[in-house]
Every structure is written in C-alpha cells, then in structure tokens.
Image (cartoon, rainbow, N blue to C red; front, top):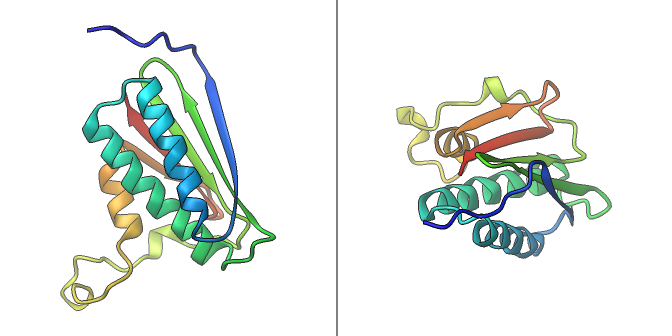
Length: 140
C-alpha cells in the first residue's frame, strides 16, 4: 500500500461566517484532506459527522448566527493523526454540565446529542476552559 508523503505540521485554516451555508466549505476541506492523506472511510465518516456537529454548534449556540462572528476551523496533520480545532466567538458553555442524551427523559428530544456524538466518534475530544473551542483528534 502506498503511503502519502505527509509533512509534519501541515496546517489548514478556514474562517467561516456564522451561517448554515458555511458547512459546504467545511465539507469541501474535509474531503480534500481525506483524499490527500488517504484517510480511511470510517475515519472520514467520523470526521465529517463530528466536524459538522461542532461547526453547527459554533454557528447556532456559540455565535448565535451573528455573521460578524467567525467560526475558525484549523486542521493540523502529521504522519499519525489529524487534529481539528473549532473556535467560535461566543461566550462558551459548561461542557461538563450537559444533560445525558441517553437518559429516559431525553430520548424523545430532537436536540442535545451533538457533544455526546462528538465524544464517541473522535479519538480524543478536548474543550478549552471557556467552552468556545474544541479540539478533535483522529488517528490516520
């Protein structure tokens, strides 16, 4: 199997306006990186799901659709992993104090599963203290 020639510390950055249409730019970048670095289909699917959730949360909950506030997406790639960082201009939130979406009273709700999904699909998920930035690690 041919290995991609990956340079240590390759960095990609997107500055997205806080609107739903920005997701297309994000998805294009994920596809470009997955193709270039021969990311497996499973990892690609996990990245696509997690990053969509994280960026939509940043747009809706963090920046509250304020198009003057950007969502910054960084991807740093090395030979073994891709580290994505998503930052919004919002006030942040207490990521440790979210309701459990698997609790019986939450099962019928249509929202509130994003962080749960992200934590289960990413290889590592780290929030900053303020709660307006998340770092997602994926092994490649």
